[in-house]
Image 1: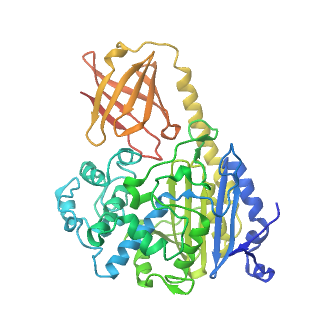
Image 2: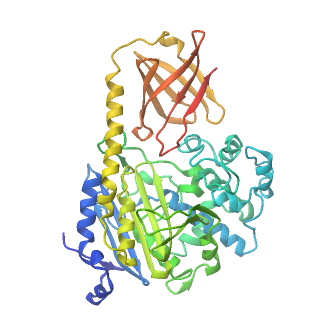
Image 3: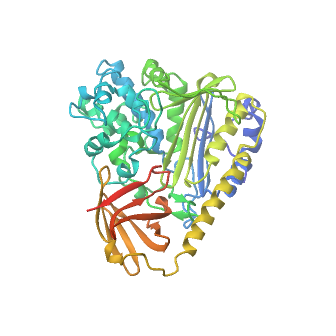
Length: 503
């Protein structure tokens, strides 16, 4: 494939390559194509911005492995948590306009809002929510909130059931429901929904004309990547599109690298785009100020020492430069958006296999090239650990499946059926299906799981959507009665298991 580099639809002048690192000018195509093969990624799109110019904007591979439709710069991907900076920017803008203070308690806008303990409830501010510092674990509650029928207000209401295990304002715990709650301040003070405000204030002025603010109708878009995973099977499986509408301020945006190039140019030109001041630079500066330290230990792999979090942005040093970035993970897609103002550099990478580390290896590889780090193949650096983890996972699943031999559990199947409940999640129903059991999840109407008995009181749990995983689970039995079942889900969704008590 010939290398074609585009700038706003025109081939770049050869003189520009004198300023471009050799890896970008000569090796990037081969590196990406090998990465797609090594990591089993159907498609990838990328944009690189340098010194107010689009150096590279291109698609690789296919958006669907059956149709073979190619990825291009206009192909839409779910950018998931890269949405968070749009939310942080919106709230920083409202502070600039004196409509709010980021240090306002959330109860100023939602007097009935509660967290697990009364002290935190009284103290928690918009800034706390945007900085992931309310004391909960990373992803806590997401199985309950993600892809469910809960409305935004219902998600906020259930946050009072999230029991913190860390210290308020001291420890970082990545929290999607926090971003939803912060985003819900926007309609309180503007009369516009989060999606209306972001469109009017950011995406429309930036001419991000193909960017969607909600998940609605994404599958019907003419140029959209299909979501895939290799988790739990080792082979590419297409999975359903996520619906992030109820957590929209955390993760709902769908975009492409053509539109994201505008976002990067805006970030690197102090809030200007096409010569117009879209937002005051003070608003962008506010999002980049670190509100919580995540790490202050020197990395053994990358030239980094400190990592913190602002308002929808990670911030770190990288070989002496200040780097801002975020990653995004939706079912079947992972992405990152990164910019280095001191170097005039911006990068966005979108992919449609969620079980891979190449999207991050490529970002670091480009940072290395532009920021003077000696070449180390970041993709090959990551692959051995990834393959070892995958092999261990597949061996574990194979061993579980080998234990399904028609053995009988200690009680009749009918003893396990019935209604179960979890304080946070709500209800599930277990019914008999032949020699197996089947779980229906009340607020996830499209999700089910099959339980096949293995031995030693363990059951093989397989979700109908492979994204959620395959696990060994147990029922709790007392006095020959089933009292509870503890389920698990892909840690990509939430780390902790859920225990459902039998009614």
